Image: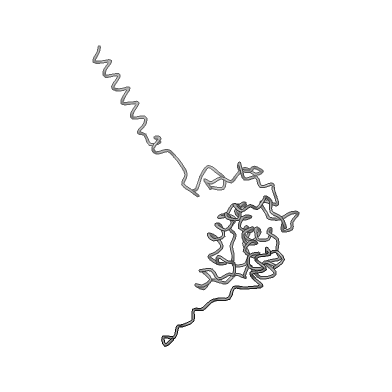
Length: 205
């Protein structure tokens, strides 16, 4: 009797473990590969598009100013948030990473890829570009222009605005009117310090 019970128990234990070793175990579940085909859906694609009229959480872009750089269809002349020293520092960091390779660190368009044969972009210090609003630069970064492709996939919206702010800071740094300088800076321009050159000593005196 005891032997029979032991036998039944062993059979049940073996059956339990065997159910986990079948073709569709936790280790080997049925699945689709990326961009694979599917016989279940009418379009034969395993990848599914979002349901029409729905937006993924966190991706609702209702703010036209923030996400398009425009207000009522025109390039915005203002920023959608306050530009601080921290924002400018972020803009400089992103500019150096994504933009300087073509535009160079100062914005004159002599980046490393240009020196190696890539088409030279216009200088950001050209008068026509200095007169453009920040929304224009945001729009170009977002959608690309000419040989420049879109950076919307690499640079988030807030960082695109930070770059636009840094570009305008670069422009101002190269084209600051005298009226915006502090009095001591004006005096320095009017009376530049003359270079001193050491006179060679005559060994005979």
